[in-house]
Image 1 (cartoon, rainbow, N blue to C red):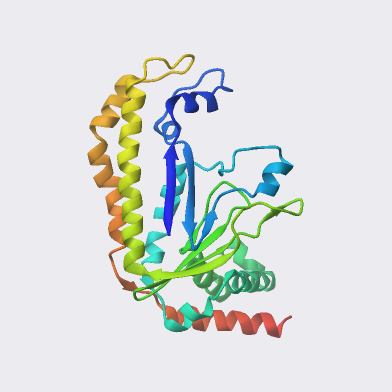
Image 2 (spheres, rainbow, N blue to C red):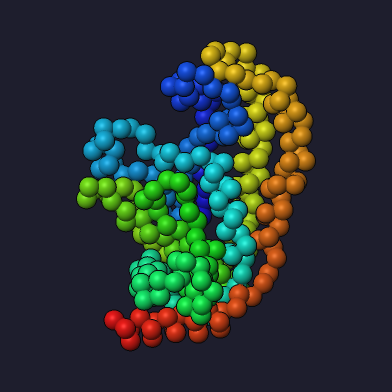
Length: 275
């Protein structure tokens, strides 16, 4: 598994913002670029040739900020680091097995509508236990819609990555990748992720320096003093904001798998009984 990315050049960024009459450049503007995840021979977040032809577009990369991706990926670390039981690990074999759990949760919520009122009932608690288990391991490209759904399940030093890339638009496949499953060692995964963040932060710092050195921002407002301070404080920001998230991946913890398994069995029985 490898994460490929590049930041846009300053001129590309100015071009992408050209539809604004006026605009104040922010650090997030500078982090705009292209990326995809390479895994098991598949390239996630790359549009299919068919959909590009349909829309007569040649930009194959998803319109999803790299800065948003790294932030939302980091939000999964707390769940990913937790080791689940062998039973749970083996239960999830592909995207369909994950979807079957979500389908049962939807049916369960139809039987117990008080769940959506956040009423502290046993049904609400059961729903929350199972849905939280999945959500904490789910990489969500928000607010982009119809994106590949990527889940991470750890059992000791094994990591299983499952993704669903079957989303369509008007019957046309959106993505070049197909759904799949990939297993790797958890320790190797941690190395890969730390390498990505190391590269990301190094290139991010260079990007800010490029922006400071740029002398022609045209109609855009660029607060040079602000970005100089941003650049000077970059190492502190890196320690405070990014390195703490990465440290989570090294903190081993067992998930309460027995409770999750028992709760899901209860939900399955309730759904089947009242089908």
